Image (spheres, rainbow, N blue to C red):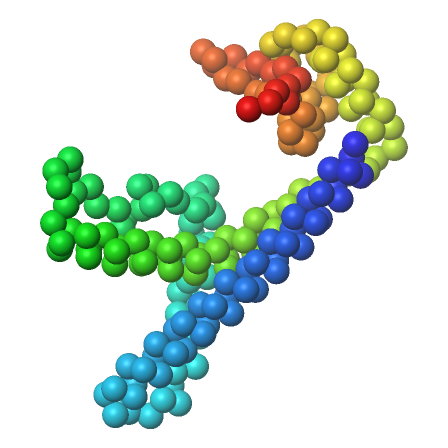
Length: 194
């Protein structure tokens, strides 16, 4: 159970790191090409374009880090600052063009933020692998079997001294957790069809 979980986390981290590299490269190309176009249109030397792209990547990385530190991540379009509710009436042509522009800005912002967010998520996965300690696998399997046999919501007081194991099972997505009226409850996660 532990080795399968850790292996899945390493695979997800590798894919996340690859995705991060792709997003950073796309952001670099976008900002370098954009800076070259603006500098060329102003009849200035385009030698500063790579430095402009590097500065943009530094800003994106800082923004991604701030987003990660605040416990946030990717946003849906309706949650973003680019979303405009035009009301329930018929859209005018200007509203439609505005929605197209803000939609494009939203997609670009999420693609650019994906670089640092995927990087940080991957590093978090690698740092938080479950330790493969002697006897821990058996403890987790035994506790999981006990929880499956009970097949009901329970609390930490039902398993004194096994709080760490309960938390590890939750971390490995084997349990459903609930907090109701300040009481923590958990039970074995059931994988029912959709």
